[in-house]
Length: 135
Image 1 (cartoon, helix red, strand yellow):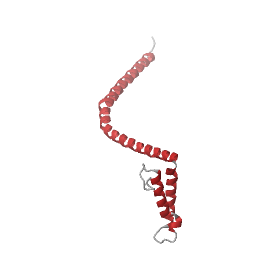
Image 2: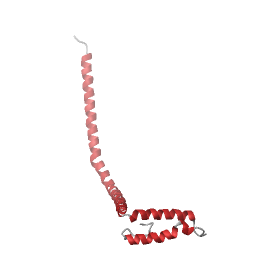
Image 3: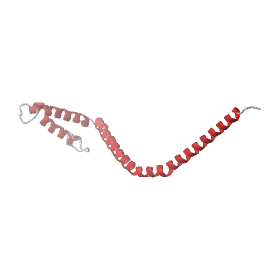
Image 4: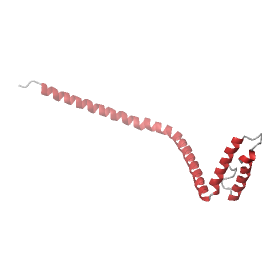
């Protein structure tokens, strides 16, 4: 649409009219010998215009292209929303970690450490009993 200088809701006739005007302006034969025109640029521009016209002139291809544009816009919107949500969530997550997760980890670690120490003592005591001389 941008290449043909048309809005996304342009009619077939509007697209065609724009295509014809641009094709006349940038067609390689129309620019031969003109000193103020870069022939390579003109040729590349004409190829872009022809590709845009080929896509937008075919109703099926145009619908497919429009869906692609909509999907890209949706993805961009979702990325913006996700970024905003994550920025808002960071302070909350920090508080949650500080107030819930850390105390839990500390208690679990302390409890685990106590259990390991107790088990080590028990094993040590049992080993000492078995090493004692028998009467």
